[in-house]
Image (cartoon, rainbow, N blue to C red; front, top):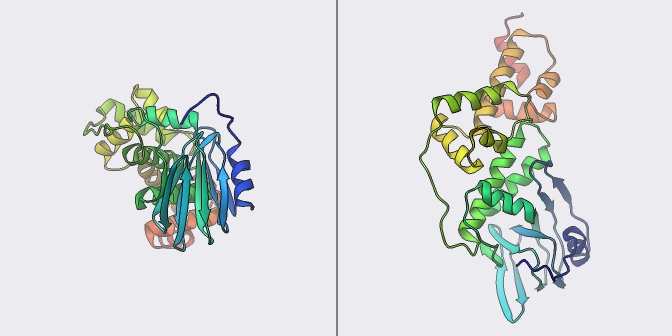
Length: 299
């Protein structure tokens, strides 16, 4: 709902006014991908939300709760439960009424980011539809994953976050958009030369400095096309390939150097030794120190 004559309110300030509290957790993406997540449990709500300057997608968690939403002459009565989402398109306004407490994650998408992601995802033009407690477990899980990735603040998670945001916009366009066309799919693979070039860039640049958008631009294709072609060519997403390659380098450092685990964790793009240890254990079943003790060649 884009209308230049509507006064748009700052989204965070308006939600703070309406919900009458502060978010429990606030995380923001880098400048490369603009988007914010807020874990925002709140109590009863009986307010009109004024038009805001960003698109809002809300993933619901926790207890079931009845909600009534009045938009113009339309009244919707639904039940909030885990796995449902609600949307507030930029510039829209509704009266919300719910009697109990809820636990939600808000994801805010600036209009320029929304349009840019539509272009990258090769999605047809369309506007976000109003949804109220709409069952969509996939979208709810993607928003939760984005929130966790941003909260980790790891450089290696940059590609994952970018991939998740593309997945989110595709999901929104396919299921919650005025667009009627489906997003095009493709079995395209990268040429041998294009794949070699992409892998060399991923392998040679510092972790966190390479984006899917930049890799796609090198080849003159969209981000969504690149992601599909890369996975068709390697069997892995760009993030999956990079994570595997980073771990291979970590194995080598643990095996043949005296570097501290914390230093290797930082080199690998993780924000903390604990985050690195957790990822390492998931892949190997051992902590980095246990793996080093078992495989070290510097004994």
